[in-house]
Length: 157
Image (cartoon, rainbow, N blue to C red; front, side, top):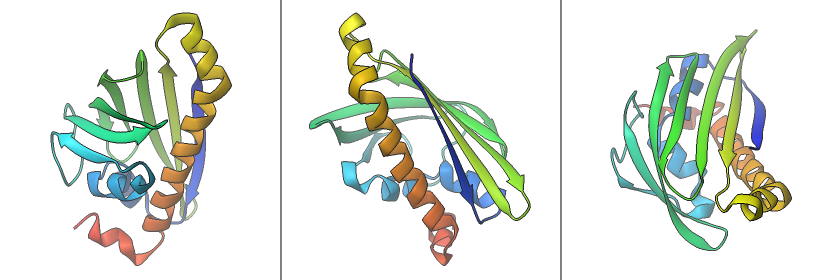
């Protein structure tokens, strides 16, 4: 199974970065490119422990739904979401946060398995892993931009 690990340094307090990372509104703003929207579950605010949300977005030219559940939450250090239903055979996304001087270090570990056996593993290796890494990097870049600007307050009001 491919594991994507990203390390993002953000010039903002850890609590702000943690809450922005689980903000539904910030998520929607950071995924405009894929036309992401919530179709089931909380539509706004912060995702909480044991909450289930279904997202709909266009990935790889196909409109898809992904239902995730927040399975762990330790504010402001970490949270984890896991796929309940969706296009992956398996998906777990761990979000870790730590402080370093005046910065917050946000570490994402995105662990997934493509469906369809050997063909799925080949597709994941050749294309899907790099696609998901680019998608997550863009999202993290947008979260960093929000957290480091005065714009953050409108997502955490």
